[in-house]
Image (cartoon, rainbow, N blue to C red; front, side, top):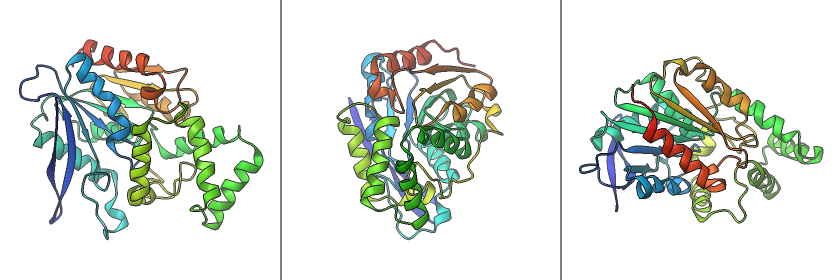
Length: 304
């Protein structure tokens, strides 16, 4: 069973709405619910929908939502660029857990930007109700993320990299050539399934409709973070994450090991699983192993 709705989210004097979709029943289920935090910033919940199998297989209530500015949640035309900061999305996550009545008992699964956001949320807000954290394919800092992506680019032809840098320097990242190059990289280091799953295409289409959040926070592409997140770095606070944590990565992920390692070294209760036959989206690339790892963690981790 599934249901959906919108939750009021007040920012200053303005009230926005967060759209969510729930698989399961929060009132009758004896299982701890899990909130799925999508990536981007600027993506939508669609590409994370395969995680509904956690409900279908194990009866765990699963909550998807579109972060503010994206998908079916409120879009915010005309707000200043400094509106789009991680604190906004942590406030939204707090608001969501309280509105759904689960703030005293829940798990988080964050993917890509969503995993870094969830980690910062766990470290800075220290929510007492957060019992388990899954950080999937996420960087501990943008600087380390860029180091990893530059390393991957070294495996592409020199003229390919020169073309990317030329467009970035000239401000022509909207050109078809640059967009095509970005997709070549995505197909090698974001998702290797061919063709791409419909849910992933839908999230990319939603970004194309309104790229405000993506462009303002990240920049023109994965290659160059020029937006508000340029100096985002949570390596100095992740030792404060108190709950058991599962870390997921892959050798050919666009988020390279150098950007993931700080989580493993600094989070007190952490388990790290690498998916050898995946890149950035193992729930599409190795679904059977992925969901086994996730369910084992959720069902067998002792709650502190």
